[in-house]
Image (cartoon, rainbow, N blue to C red; front, side, top):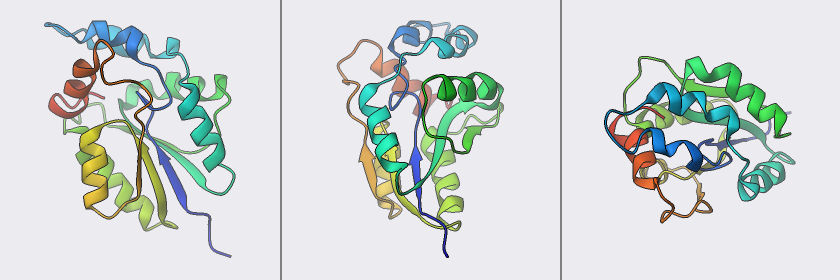
Length: 164
């Protein structure tokens, strides 16, 4: 019997509401320590949680984030505290400053070789575009409105500065 396909889910802006901590990175100097230290306090985005719970019925769930590896314990505890389906958590190396889409696409290709990736859920438009261009089916997580304060800071962190 072949394994279930993967549903690959982003964290920040997809299931985790990061708006309360964007203030740490919307100006210079950016306070990355405070930004990541505040992650355990992220509220759950109900729309993202609903999508993950639905997909977990007939997929293996993997969480793919641009958060650095040093955030692993906080991230895994946050997922458990919010009763999200279990699955492997893939984070970037602490010294990895590539744009988020590059690291994510690399991981997606490896997961595709392990039972196939059925769907990717991400809020980052560059990740969405690049994953689609690579042949992945993507659900754009647009439930955290782009007009919300700090969204430019999140995009810069993900794609320009390679931080989340």
